[in-house]
Length: 229
Ligand code: ADP
Ligand code: ADP
Image 1 (cartoon, helix red, strand yellow):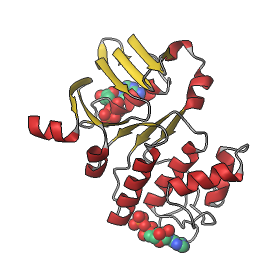
Image 2 (cartoon, rainbow, N blue to C red):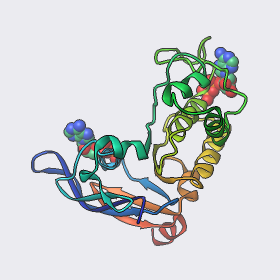
Image 3 (cartoon, rainbow, N blue to C red):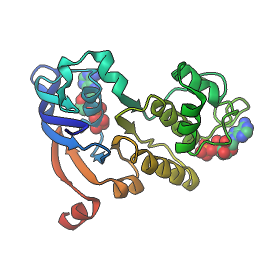
């Protein structure tokens, strides 16, 4: 079964105003799917349904073939990692942040997550907590490094599926490439559904879904979409 499947999913925040209108797609096991589309298209809503924050008005969301609505919320969330664009980090070092996220994880698990996200060597840095201003003392990680910390945190639990909202804020080239390497490496270990804002991510995805006004209007590889546009 697919890691994630949407079958004719409809969803509205307010009655009579559907935001998702018959959305169907699959993220295969170890698959790498990119979700693109204009602001307001419904991408974040797809994530909210995938992590069972909301339930569909109609249609079903399946994870590993099981209807997510029938699973306990906690059981389902334990299998899904979510990384949002501006993932808050806590006070303490990068290593502390990983320990808080997974108190039972062994050093091996932590080192693995650190290596997968190219953060080896930065574990003693202070990411800077919620309110630390960028560039000042006490915030020793760049925006890109903080994003990779958020991914590392999600990976410790070895999720079967990672939902990742790529940052839109400016990343310098070095950070963009590092994030991209991390995404590629991650996709070898778990299924990925990425809200893609960056060209490199769309290119690397096995499949790209175009969401417009709550409907998937095109899907295919990056090259197929280029040819048909
Ligand atoms: P995207 O992530 O593609 O920008 P969203 O899923 O955030 O799109 O939003 C899709 C539509 O749903 C938008 O019209 C947005 O205004 C609306 N919307 C999102 N969240 C809420 C909410 N909590 N309550 C009401 N409307 C919402
Ligand atoms: P970005 O432009 O992506 O926000 P920054 O300019 O914040 O990146 O950081 C660039 C590099 O400097 C990063 O590798 C980051 O880890 C390092 N860095 C930033 N602030 C500090 C600091 N206070 N102490 C040590 N290293 C820092």
